Length: 611
Image (cartoon, helix red, strand yellow):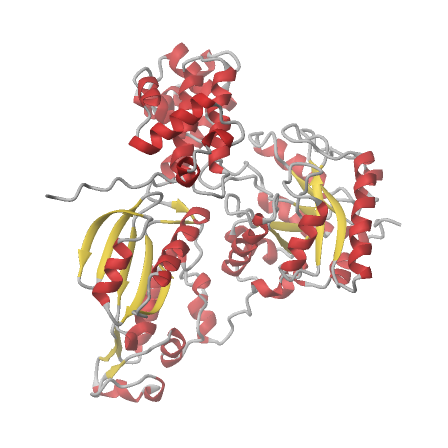
């Protein structure tokens, strides 16, 4: 009797997605906001769980989850048991598929979709684009030419965002979980070497297929282990040395096996990019070698004299193999190029002249100057965040809770900041009494209001150790208005850092139409540092913009913008973004000791710091 096909378990993200989609459909259909919120709140709860939703269901504890009532709990159980939710299916039958697809357009929500469908009979993204181009959207009350322009830009963003590209914040943890799974199941020690490769190893913002490269003493065993990992939904393609699978939650993943003696060459070729590899191949050919996954093959008899001692001959003349990338780069006369720089953007020329920069490393970050606590929308207290930061090896951490003026969250005002200062002082005194070299400083993430004014007065800002100014609302203002608004904040003498400057959310919200060149020049002139926000949903500044900022004379900081202890781990995304931007330790303000950092803040360079 054939074994029944095992239905893959649904992940937290998949279950949350179904309930969010249910809430969207309910809103499109005009259901009351209380019913809509029941589903969207359930989606948020499930998405934020640290425990597997299947384990919670097995323990009969779904009803114990916050914001999950009895009816929702029953629907979660049905979805987990069957893989479908009849309630969602019934709602989806009432709404044309093209209407639902319009929700994928960034900045177009369920209420807007409902009006476009009901009032203008627009039932697809293509129809929406055509209507905006023809000026027909302005028939709707509250819609105008600017709204049409914004929607067209959002559709363009959607068209550029390929469905098979996954943000690094999702794809990297997934790839790492596959590595962990293989190592955990590797009882016989079959997997000798393994690495993430492709664009993910280069730390690109988005990736396609998750790619792994490995050396194994038992190829069949290793490939079978990979096929059987719990993240795997089904096998797409299987060969003697490679397997491609679809995953329960994420893109396709591929594992390829190579010989150990050729690891260096195979790793380099599997990492890319194509532009980088083309240049490497041309250099190798110029000195008489042909490169392929197994190593270098001599094109003519003279090639064997070129740096031959640096590669190992595999038993006959004219062949060189490399068990590490460094040896291969050295063999063809190049510095070893870090994966983050392998984009065909000047790295070959720099490596040829031994002029690659010493890139910033995670261990060189000594603290952070943008983070949140329960004083605003953070999940942990001042003391808890301080101890988590200290445990990471940081020497300092800044409490910079949101100011009043940001409508979507509770913010601190002048009175709250005074009370918060007393709490910070108490934490610092405790560390000092214990002889622990760690210090909290106090700041705020002050909201840049619609007219460029700040959410707190200059008098209040002057009393703080550091001020981060950020724009969270009105991001769709026209270019001139949002640029002037940002410039006004940058020129404020008490603003030390410009936070996540473009306001983008990867794949979800386009950057604001900011004249970034002008803003960065103003930051360089005023001494305002610019942030690389390490949250992988933002990575703002991007690597390209960070490189531009340093080129214009700006100082940068890298912050995780942590709202919880767990989010401190996001710092690595910011560090690798900085590395992709060719940034060095000296380019990063929070790679300096606290006294140096404070002295270099704009307020202290201009004598406007707290007295």
